[in-house]
Amino acid sequence: MAELAPAPNFLIAGIGGNATRWLRSNLDRHPDICAPPVDTRFFTDEERLAALGHRWYREQFPDWQGQPLIGECSPSYLKWSNGPGAIANRIRKHLKEVRVVAIVGDPLERYLSGIARAIRWGRLPSDDPGGLYRFEVEPERCFAEVSASIQGLSVHAFRLRLGDQLLVVFRDDIIADPAHAYRSVLEHIGADPAFVPDGIATVRFDDVAAIRLERPSLEEHQALYSWWRVDVDKLAEQEGRDLSVWDPGVNPNAPSPEELMAEMMAAAAANEGSEAS
Amino acid sequence: MVTGEFPLPNFLIIGAERCGTRWLRANLEEHPEVFTPSASVSYFNSLDRMRRRGIRGYRQQFGGWSGEPIVGESSPKYLLPGNDPREVARRIDANLPDVKLIAIVREPVERMYSAVLHHIKRGRLPIDADLFAMVAHSHPDVDELDLVGAGRYTANLYPYHAIFGDRLLVLLNDDLRSRPAEVYDAALRHIGARPGFEASRLDRVLFSNRRSVRPTGPRLSRQQRRILYMLYRSDVEELEALIGCDLTAWDPGPPPFGWEAEVPGIAETVYAETRSD
Image (cartoon, rainbow over all chains, first blue to last red; front, side, top):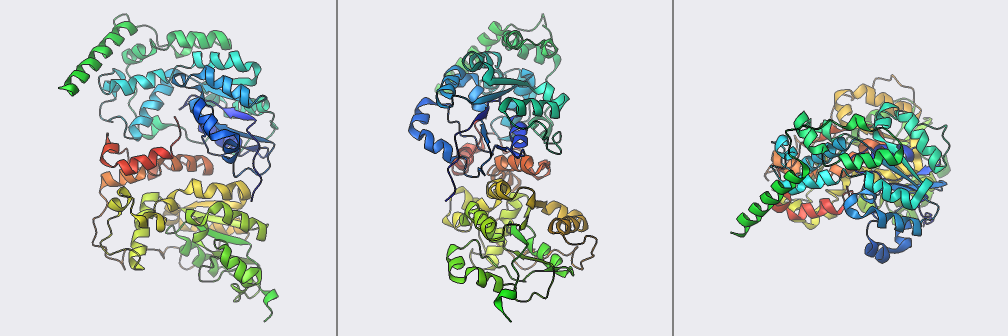
């Protein structure tokens, strides 16, 4: 019987679609690090955590080979709809010294990645991407992807509770210089920064390219971004970084979020009405 | 001849079944520096066999050896989930500390269909076996024969990767068909044999049942392939990260929107094993 692994001393809490698998798999190549392809969601739900317990958590790393650093990656930890403040509290309570890495990026790219993923999984139709971007098709599912791109508030909730234990990595920086971004994570979690695996730039993490998803028009992008602008401002202010490069500007003819919300409520009501009849 | 004269292997072909292991073993055996027994040895997958025969009994499987410096065996059962690859990997590591490993993988739905033909040929499945219906209705033979599980390559390979690291070489069946000489050379270099040798059967497919089995059951439709591929989508994404290889060519495309309602049994299996993002 193999020895039970220790509890993780680092977590990757990236927003889904933002290169979390790239980071995890490349950390796993480092000789000091065990970062297997498991997603325990251990801290996502209080009741589930209590029911499963610490021993279960440690049992999720059966392939640990004695490396000093052990970690897992769960995009669910930073997802706004899961309550990241409560998640950060649980992490702090159960893993006192843990180092946390959050990957954030242009909300449009995360959103498109989520839409592409939903299409690849048969959760959204593939024949009318514009209809998806304008909430004309499967509006609830599509809005869930808009909501999943909220990251400034989530990072804020983590930063408040974890302070310097949290490192925020920008997806833009990973694309520009993957080795540099990788080293910054190694330094944060306490691994030897001299090791960088071969082919670090070549691992694919792109659902959008895999299905050649048509990108939104400028008008569609502007309408989508109106849901994220305040959140991105929060992220920029907190992390001290100019993120205006993500902003496609405001289209004066586009409906405001308030008008979009009213349209969606009306569409949902009509949908429920037709289902009831 | 004294039992002690027989060597222990310094390389193993561990699977996966129906992915070209016979082709690789037969061609490696032609190399003047390499010896392999012609039959599958299947030792480390059976604790009972290990206890009964012991390591001396294992050595006897290499009775035809005549001094070749490189000795290996091919046992595709080492990668079958029903044999617990994690335990098999630990047993191999404990008994063959410096051994090199080779695995071959293939588009998993193709592998599953090939396995069905193989089992029909061996009389384990009826000639009119309906693969899609068997999986959709969780027929006991699906688990019994590891029909789905054998194609979850990351799940089965990761324990080997964790222990053996670079001593595990993963080859793609796709390359074995399109550029067999290169694949063969890569295998030779990995086990420490002189590359450049021209084996006589490199361009012969030794693992096909297509000519010898004429199944009368329904063939998989395109939509059914897409639905069955959902059982592997997550695992293939992790495999891309594990071996640093783009496998989008395997992807038959998204399943039809709303497929979950059509085949709830398959959907339940898929989502029980999916990342939380």
